[in-house]
Structures are given as structure tokens and as C-alpha cells.
Image (cartoon, rainbow, N blue to C red; front, side, top):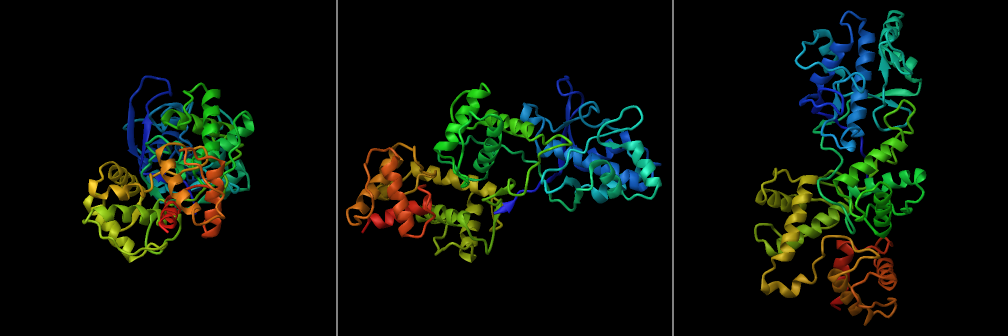
Length: 447
């Protein structure tokens, strides 16, 4: 498990006008954007501590917009506007001040957080002369700096004593939350966890949405029902599948009910930002992702001589690295031996292709291959039927298994049998069939 902290983006896309105004979008380095805004809104002759406090506020404001995908969740294709009415003043091609640039370069990957919240704080501010607001006063910060207040003291004066600075945040590409593919029944991973987390919170304001009790990050019957009701409430096509439109509508409503872009935000806690699946798997790692990677690589290596088939276990070891490097080289990925999110997408595509292009000589083996999605109560189809046949073979020698009807429907009896096998062989008892349980059931069926 890992807490998903915000990433400071390398680049930011700015709409040169109000949100609905017909204007160009430009993409510039994040540091260039912050320096431009600071040079547009602040005076370089101000005390250094006042400038630093204001630049922290500018960074955190922008980070809040980007992290919450405030505009992208509304259907726009930019991160922030150049309008000070909506966001912060940005003037294309303007010159910037050297002392401001120096401060930005030294603190650009630091931002303000409130209490125990994870998201960058919405550091609202105004000039303090022409306009006033609940947040920071830019001219007021000058007076405080002249009194000897530090940048952090100035920020606390306006935002409360429970604010702090998150230092040395990671810097990287701003990928956005939507994973780039539709998410539906049987899928698993961080995108599913995000959907479930958001819908659970939205349900507090929209109680007609069915509850989701799972914390496994697996798209099950409960999740599908919650998504369908959400789509119905917000007049989206009721498919039970989360496409880009549904994803960003969920994101927008979640941000709204938690007031994440507000001074008085409910905030996102560390527990809410904790995901089961990491973005990189490397030497020494253990857990569910390692086991899944090994399963899929082993299946591919069985048919592909370019991928060595080596002994593996639940630890990402030297054999794992050798297999991953061979896989990365063959499919044009960076050959690092570290398994990333990009590798995972390619691995799934290769495995799916393998399922549909089996040579006839292996036709007896194909039925034993995992179908590349989780089977849970409510699943149906040929893959469920295949699994039930394996279960039936086990029931013939193990009379303690409740039983199974080979009907292609993952019903109560199928779930009870799965739970019994999970209990007997040391799996987590959740009634869900993933690749490792599938593999165990196939092995047991051959007795």
C-alpha cells in the first residue's frame, strides 16, 4: 500500500481567458507559469518573506486546481485559466523578475497543506486594497513581513495555525486521473479504488446511491449498482461502465461535496489517498501485484520462446527482473526491469491477444488460462462456466465443498464453494476469483 501524494507537474495547460471564453490554450513549464503569475501580481520590491509567502499561495492554488482536475472534470481541456476572476493572473510572453524567479526555483515543489489533509490547500488570496477576501491579503503580507514575520508565520496568520508546508514533493508528468480505458465488472486496481472511494463519499449527499462495502479495489456487483444509480441521477447513459464522461462527473461531484476547492474544505485524509496498488514494482517488492505479474508473464512465456520461463514466487526477485526485461525489450518498452503502470497495460494487451490466437496444439491448455478479469458474484458467461467445470471436478473428490451448478452464472452456491477453497488453502476469504485462485482451482481439479 502507498499514500498517493500529489505530483508537481512538469507542465501546465493554461486557457488564455475565462473558462467559457473562446481563447487559446498554451502549455508551459510549471515554474514558468508560477513566475509569470507572481510577476503579474506581486511587486519585486516587496520584502523577501512577503514574496515567499505569496508564491507559496500561488503554487498551492495552482496545485489544488490541477490535483482536483477542477476544469477537466467539467469537460474542459486545460488545467487553469489566465483570468484572476477565476484563478490567477497570467500574461502570455511577459518578462519576469529575477528575484521572483529565484524564489520560485527554490520552492516550486513545496505547497501548503491544511491539518492532516493530503490535497494542496486552496490558498485563496486577494490584493487587500481593491478587494478583500477570507484568505491572504497580498498587501497585508507586506506589513507582516516588515514586522519580522517569516513566510510560514504570514501563511499561518491568514490560513490558521494548522497549516504546514509539504516540502520536496515529487515532480513528474501530469497524467490526470482517468486511466484511459473504460472500467467495468471484474476490473481491479487503483482506478476502481478511486471510483469506490468517491462514490462512498458522494452517497452521503445522495443516499439513493447503493452502498459499497468492499475495500479490495475490485469492480463487483455493488460497485456496478452504485455506478448505475450515479449515472441515472446525473443523467448519464446508465451502463454500469465508467467511461471518461462518468469518471469526470464522479470526480467533479466528489470535489464539490467535499469542498476540495474551498478554504473550508473537508479535505482528503491519508487513509482516503492510500491505494492498494503501487505504480512501480521493483526488486524486493511483495504483494498482490507481484503475484499477478508472475502469473501473466509465466502464461506468456509458456508460448513465447523470447520470454524466459523461470521459477517465481511471491517476491519480485532476479528471475522476475530477467523476465520483465525480456518482455520490455520485445514490446518496445524501456528496459529497466522495473514493472510500471505502462508495462501493465501492455502485459494485459499481450495476454488478451494470447487468449484469442492460441495455436491448435495448445487448445487443451487454453481452457485453463485465467480470463484477465476478476470473477465475482453476479458475473456470467463462458468464463464462469469454465471455472465452474473446474469446481465440479474438485467437488467429486472433496465432499466438503458446498457444490456447483455449471450454468455460467456466478451465483450464491459458486461463491460459497470459492470461499471454502479460499479458507482451506490460505487465501483471503472474499469469494472473488483472481488469477492465483483460478490457478489453484485448475491444479486441484486435475487430481
